[in-house]
Image (tube, rainbow, N blue to C red; front, side, top):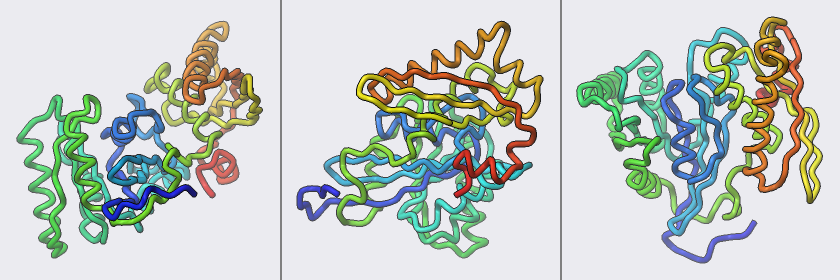
Length: 307
């Protein structure tokens, strides 16, 4: 691994980004890096893995874990997502708790604060979506933390910041706060690396994102994407992937009348993948009915959700 020039002030560390579903964690990571490494959509719980994104600059290197949003799990996939999110905080130098400043605190916010009150990591709490925030709702988060800290005899005070991941407001202050809190030391990864997320999982995530944007709430968690073939060459990549659904009726929804919807998704994903990898991507998609795939441990392993 290439090392950074000798700099006594160089810092590097692991930063876990946690919070309930759909508070803007993936958007925040993409904003800090200035490039897209984590999928976003209007549908909650789209992130299913802990994606490792790497931000390197003169001050040092921040290695981010973008975790799934914690929610009430109804099946094996949900339990895996929750376990992934909670385990990401273990060993992190800094934990960022992302809070939705447009809403009052919820049960999941309370749960994260209680977990982090016992954490040994440095804490940064960000009140996101400040482009449409409410000062009174912000105060409820402050009050909730004060109550939880007292109950747990937690004497540490998190750094509170108001940001908007969507517009970039407060992002510079946030990165400065993170560099102030990670330890001195050499980079953890090569400095030109943006993510170590497996390529096939990254491709499947892009396809899922396009499905979410087109279908919205119609089939949010009934869908998975399995990249079955990836042929790389200097001129073009050939990618084949299967979209898994639970029922035949869902298969028809994904394909659309005369295959138009599936064609639209294919073209949209193909365009983004070509731009992402800077090479022409030829994408072919199939839709397969696999009943209760989210409860099948073997399928979850094949999809990369379980190691």
